[in-house]
Image (cartoon, rainbow over all chains, first blue to last red; front, side, top):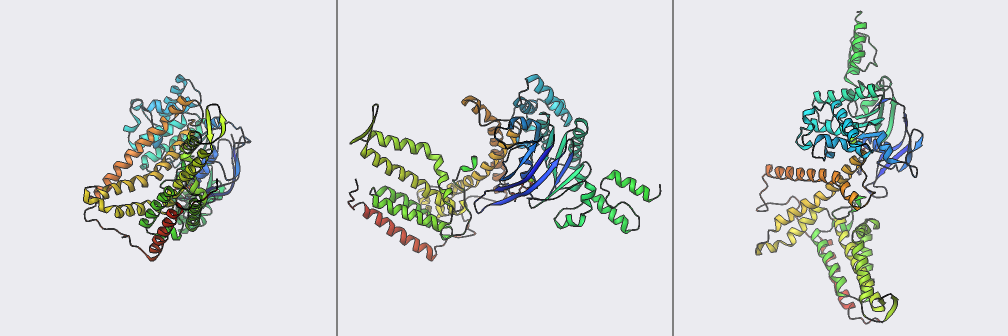
Amino acid sequence: MSIRAENLSYIYNEGTVMETYAIRDVSFEIGDGTFVGLIGHTGSGKSTLIQHLNGLLKPSRGTVYFNGEDIFAEGYNMKALRGHVGLVFQYPEYQLFEEDVLTDVMFGPKNLGCSDDVAKERAIRALTQCGVDEGRFDRSPFELSGGYKRRVAIAGVIAMEPDVLILDEPTAGLDPHGRDEILGMISRLHKERKMTVILVSHSMDDVAEHADKIMVLNHGELLFYDTPREVFKHAAELESYGLSAPEITYLAADLNAAGISVDPSMSTIEEAKEEILKALGR
Amino acid sequence: MIRDITIGQYYPVDSVIHRLDPRTKLAGTVIFLISLFVTSSPVGYVLATLVLAGVIKLSRVPFKFMTRGLRAILIVLLLSVSFNIFLTPGTTILKIGFLRATKEGLILAGFMGLRLVYLVIGSSLMTLTTTPTQLTDGLEKSLRFLNRVGVPVHDIAMMMSIALRFIPILVEETDKIMKAQTARGADFDSGNLIQRAKAMIPLLVPLFVSAFRRASDLAMAMEARCYHGGEGRTKMHPLRYETRDRIAYLLMFVYLALMIASRFIRFRLF
Ligand SMILES: Nc1ncnc2c1ncn2[C@@H]1O[C@H](COP(=O)(O)OP(=O)(O)OP(=O)(O)O)[C@@H](O)[C@H]1O
Ligand SMILES: [Mg+2]
């Protein structure tokens, strides 16, 4: 289930004074089962970019291929594509509308043509995966707390059982505990179901833990698309674009400066632990 | 799709028209609208067209923004034009079944259509060059005399400015929710009328929920800042007429006078 973008550009309000280049000539390929972290500061074009991947926005120039097929070609089955590429928007809780949680989550699978029974089964599975307990299934989604609304909304997309799951800042506005839970859930989906995941964030720490590859956008241009280790080697450059490397990278630099030699490109807590133990000779 | 709504859509460029006092623009719009109804002679329409074209040029707003508003009144336009063509008595020029198109009808329909189109373009021009805040400030100040007969002008103006402010927000919100539901496989563009109406539920429910939430948040924020109506409230940018406004008023009255005069020009084209 590979996704390939070719010379993608998108201009908002083309031809008026409010014209903005949101993304500019972006090309990349995301292989099957990869976990990609998409990073960039506010307004760098992350949300715009991902909306092209399931055909919600039509590029001003360039195109997107899904499994080798041009999704913007005449007659391409967009509805089927939306079943394969699930997109969870920024602050997805505003999309809730049904009378109870379970029915709301069943909306996606039913749109894909699932029967009520199958849709219900999928919805229950998705809700459980997202950490929503059975006691909340028949509550109104509007009565839930913000964190649970978020989970229900994410479950609404996961219940469609997409091959590619794209999440736009799913942890924005959550407490650290909620953030860890959501990230953990995404990482599990990626491992267990071999889902391709694209996680949008502006925090390197969110992404460094789980991502196989990191994509960095700056003012609509693709700066880096590489493994976290490679990308974090450019910590100084990232900083000049208003981004920071993960805390661990700074720790590595400090340790090295203090004469404890560790791999400067370590980026997760696991790696850091091993490196430090090694440096201390244990 | 939904972004075609132009009312309350300000087009941010700097031009003479943008810099005019909102009261001047309001008066200008009203005078233009009146002028369309005082004349029915071709000379008058040529003059109106020239003036409209001139003001559009001065405003530096691209022409296609003016015509966007027309889409909304397309049906009204078609209906009124065809009623006029077929229901005006006079010399028959075309017969379709029991319908008779008359020469008088055609002329009347032409003027009628032009009037409607100019009405919409004229008012779009005002909203495109005036921010909602300026617009309501202008209205509030121009209509303040109504206070004396017990009309709560300030409150109405405040409601209007909030409503105008919310239009683009709600349009954006609609767009966002539509996209989110489309990503969940919803389909807004196909099916019969009943299916389409049902497809609106996933859009309308979240939209209403968010509109009510925004309204209540705003009410709370206003109260937290001690809003208590217009009594003794001062303006950050008080409206003041400049030289360009005086010139504009002068030109407007010259224009209106010419339009009235054109009524009396006997022009035999037909
Ligand atoms: N609907 C729109 N109309 C006009 N311009 C827009 C619209 N949406 C986004 N933009 C502009 O496009 C650019 C990219 O916006 P985008 O929302 O993709 O950024 P982002 O990286 O997702 O930012 P954030 O981290 O704040 O979510 C910005 O300059 C923004 O102002
Ligand atoms: Mg965004």
